[in-house]
Image (cartoon, rainbow, N blue to C red):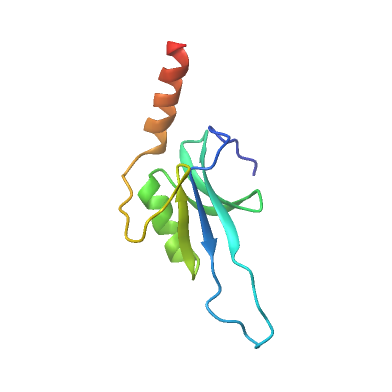
Length: 108
């Protein structure tokens, strides 16, 4: 299924860090995943530009989906800035954010 982003820039970026390699010489780089606000009013995680099955209508819900889905999930950036350890994320809803974007566009 094809999805369309409501915003070109990701809402959040995260790394999935493998805790330990299976073999001593088997070093793995973290995988990068990005959270986008999509026009279907969901925050959806993408890996290598491909949509994943993990999405939610709320920002906190999307983070919970990812945390439960990927071992080693670490949020590193939110709305263009680095995330501090134990930082609380403000609850926002995709539908509200899209309406706000439309209102900003109508004001121009």
